[in-house]
Image (cartoon, rainbow, N blue to C red; front, top):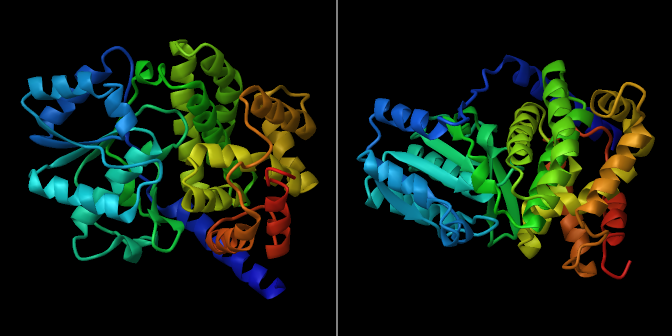
Length: 397
């Protein structure tokens, strides 16, 4: 085991050096009162003619896309809607999107929604750029390596960070697992911040997506590959989330809080796309694959037990984060208490209702297979420790 852990740490060092040297693209952020006007002018300059608008059925039912669709059509841009996707987009759904893009001779992709819509758009673009390579063949690092058709995103949740990341996640329903595809070309070309589109988000989704962003920032911060740049982004994200998330949850139409959460999700995304994530995400992805659990909620359910497992092994990092987010005299314990109090305030339960004891060994095994060696975690969890942690989350525990 010691030899294996040494290999992992060597691999993590390689990832750290790559993150320092690789030119990770930054999307253009269209924000403020003239955001839509500036974006439309940009599309005109890019000679955009036909957009595939990707969203989930919930966003379409609420007509959150309608105003943008009308303005695109008014600017002589044809719009085709693809909304056949769920909380965890599958390989087949991505392939359906590819066929829709091709059949309508689109030249640009626009995702309006949360992480599922954004990841779907990124992966459709990857398949368009790589028509002879399957999504399974793209699993891992730098397997796309092509210029993608332009992808623009409009987040309707504030959590995923997919608008600035090099990653996209897809569900393999046949094998009951989720996997990520990671490449510099997957970073969207532009992101449009429209906080009013997030104001109607139900409280539960506001909570779970907000904790998703918090998890990104925390795992980026306590992982061993954190840098001065990523720590700064995580500190900004956590400070904003601790202040704005309770407001957005309790006062959903507070556009100031909604705007802060959009920026927080982006900052957290900029952090973890350079450092990767950790065991919270490794477990959450399996919960999504096994039970269809939304990714943000899965992260929220797992965050507390993982922080408890790490214990004082991450206190130095958490104390530094506390000083930048709670005040100069704050401690790791105070930050933990603040995070746990936030989870309670947002109604995150201390158990996973869908979790079945008989699934735990395989969930643990697949979570560890995802995490090792790709995630530069602060310390390592064994199969038995992972199973014990999951048992503590059973409904009857």
